[in-house]
Length: 339
Image 1 (cartoon, rainbow, N blue to C red):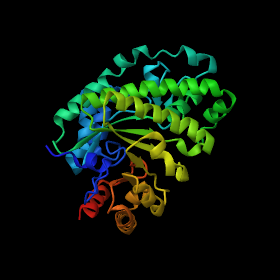
Image 2: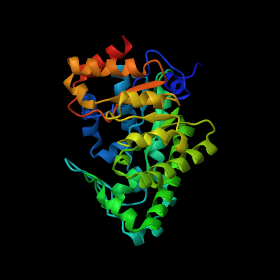
Image 3: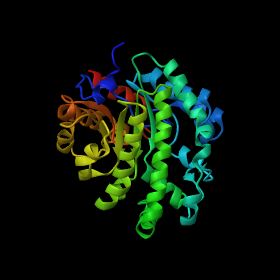
């Protein structure tokens, strides 16, 4: 069988029209997702139920025919496997037991394989049930982003608690990030072995770091993960999404070893074109253009295709689709790209 479209792009090929998927494409903007989630009970119950997680992953593929499906799960399943008291509060997001310096050495990853087994089961089912041509993307959170939630115990506007923690406890932070990198790499390896075609590492909070911290927290742990994953799965295709990293993306691919570089919507297209000289880029439509629809949507799509369409491009949003995105605007987006 011919390689799947998105994998070919990650190998550096230019494909026209480009493959398209959307971050959070299985989500609350879809009525069928809301119905399945209600059936599951809590959000984590949905993540750990292979039947329901498979169903919600397939929903946007059935409805829109995206070129890729991304596993339905959450970046915080890793701290959940470390027994950090993860729960989700409606309207407030994730809550965990804040991590103290003296607890880092005592974190025990030995239960992770058992804890995450339902997610791996979901991956295997998805590969079995997806259309032959659809790429299956596995994922995890990057060590820095996961650490920010573990340290503060919740999301914060600029992750000041984790940044301060790193400045005042550099050795402890290094220990934590190394452990998360090892665990996350093992998790990605299992996803690839279960049938994922490629994986994405989400560093949603890379943009709050200064240059030295970016090197230590966003580059070094991800480079370790890429090395470990490829040692177990030679040739594994990996996308790195360091949201908000801006100019620091210029060497991110070379330093981490990722194949594709995910771009948020603030990355200038002229800069994206430079990045594209070294390989695939993914992005980067502002999710609010998708809500606005009409001319704002058309212009945003056209600019990306004009700037990046002749090189290796995976079309995506610059961050996750929001719950208030109209379904008909997603249909219009796909018509525009494929037309």
